[in-house]
Image (cartoon, rainbow, N blue to C red; front, side, top):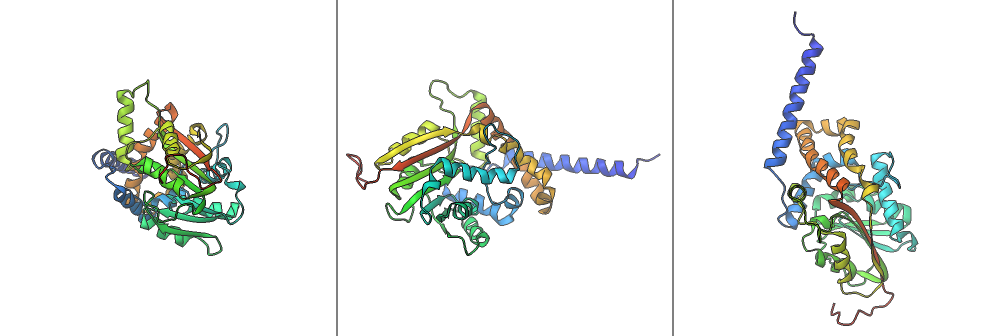
Length: 330
C-alpha cells in the first residue's frame, strides 16, 4: 500500500526545505560580504533595497527594537518604532523647538526620519551612502512631512559647520572604519547648544580580558558576513566623541540597552514565520537569501546575550558658544 498523498507531499516539502537550508548555510560560509570600503556597504544596501525583501519582512525601520524595561513581548515592528521614541526622549530631542533641524545619518529608507518629523515636529535631513535607500526613502515620504533625503558620505558631510540643531544616527557606525573621523564630522555640523544622539553595535571592552578563541571567531563572522569593519567598544566611542575637537556642555554620556533590544534578534527570524508571504513572494531566491542571514542573526543573538556585543547609546550637547577648547584647530 502506497503512502498517502499528504505524507508524500510533506516529505517533499521537508526535503526541499532542508535543501534550501543547506544551500543558505553553504552561501553563508562560502560567500561572505566582507567590508572593503564604503562602496561595499552601499552595494549591499542597494541590493537589499532593490529586491524589497528586507522592507517586506521588517517594515520601514531597519534597526533593532525596544521591548521595554524589563523587556517584554511586543509587536516586532512597533518595538522598532518605540526604539526611535525612547532614544529621542533619552537624547533630549523632545526638548527641541518645533521646526528644529535634525540630521539623520544612515537614514535607511527613512523610517526614523519620518517618525521624528511626524511625532516631534522636527525638520529632518536624512542621508545614506546608498542611492537605492535614498530613492526608496523619498518615495515612501508624504509631501506634508518636513523631510528631505540626500546621498552623502558620513565621513565627508557636505554641510557647513554648526548648521544643524541635532544629529541622530542609529546603527550606522558599525559600517564605518574611520570612527574618529565619523565622530568629528557629526560634532562639526552641530550648532552651539546642539545635541547628538547615537546608537551603535559595540563589542565589549577587551582590556584586561582578551577575547577567547570562540569570541574572536564570532566577531570575525559578524564582520565578514554583514560588511562590517572592526567594531568599537562603548569606551572607544566616548573617547572618539571627546576628541572630536569641539567644546561640550554635556557628555558624552553612554548607556547599554542590550537587554531592552535583545528580543529583536529572535524576532527578526520569527517575523518570517509570522509573515511567510513577505519571504515567499520573492520566490526561491528570496527564501534562500532569507535563510542565508539566519546564522548571522543567531550569532548576533548569542553575542548580545552573552555580553560579547553591546547595544551602546550615546548623547552629548555642544556648549552654547562657538569657542573651541584650547588647542582645537578645527
